[in-house]
Length: 110
Image (cartoon, rainbow, N blue to C red; front, side):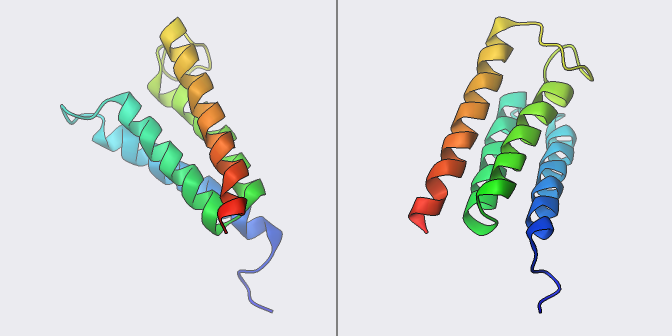
C-alpha cells in the first residue's frame, strides 16, 4: 500500500496549498501591482488544482479555508472575521460560489 494513499492526505495537501497561497499573498502584498484581489485568483487556482488532483472533499475544504483565510488576512479589519464593507462581503460570496462550482464540476471533467 502506498504511504500517500488514504483519504486524509488529500485534505492535508489542500490545507497546505491554502497555507502556501496565504503566505505568498502576504509576501507579494508589498508589490505595487499586486492587490488583495490578486490573492483571490491564487485561491481559485488552489481550489481548481485540489479539485482536479485530490478530489471533491479536499477541494471543498480548500474552498472553505480560502474564503476564511482571505477574510482573515486580506479584508479590513485585518486579523478578524468581521467584514467592514459590502464590496468585501460580495467578493467573499463570489469567491465561495466560484470555488464550490469548480469543486463540483471538476470531477465531471476527469
